[in-house]
Length: 231
Image (cartoon, rainbow, N blue to C red; front, side, top):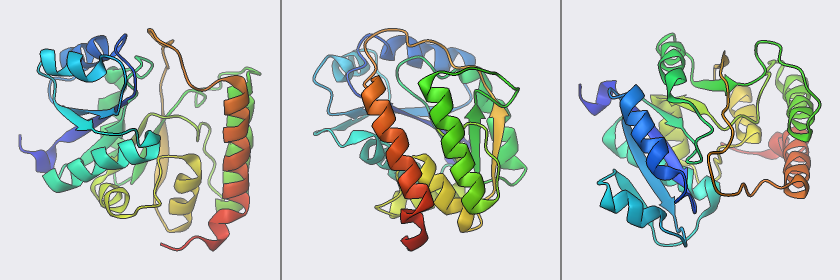
């Protein structure tokens, strides 16, 4: 199968030496039919070294670009190789490869973006992340008319057309406000139910204060900034 019919798994990785080997090895075991690229985002630990020693497919960025720049580098790779779809897949072990095929099925039905939702099957809770996700979901519904249960999920698959958009547009970050913007531009977005595993090792950057600031920025962007955004 050539790249034109294949899915590329983009694995942004910053200081994931504790997780990257198990993430890639399990992905290859569960989904040997997909390709992957580890995008090392200027890690200061042994992430890149481990990838080289194990012969992983690696895009090694010389400096830290942050998630948006790191993911866009992966999308540029997917665009240049003409992949049929690409999926954002965390390097910390939280995303599960067994959901990739069901997401690909929705892309083949004609959707542009498929989100792996933690809440699609009615999961309840009152954590800061769940509350924030519901608020962002409400903001997206108010501004686009589309109901998404988990817009903050980082497991998202993109069609060939969306790969092109993200690869060529500098202001396209893999965030809920971009999803909201693309919905307004006519993109077809759907969700599939997924389960997110606990982080395997290392430490998440998304501390409570950081998470609260992120949610606030997303709400302001969706409700206000996106009204002035140009394609």
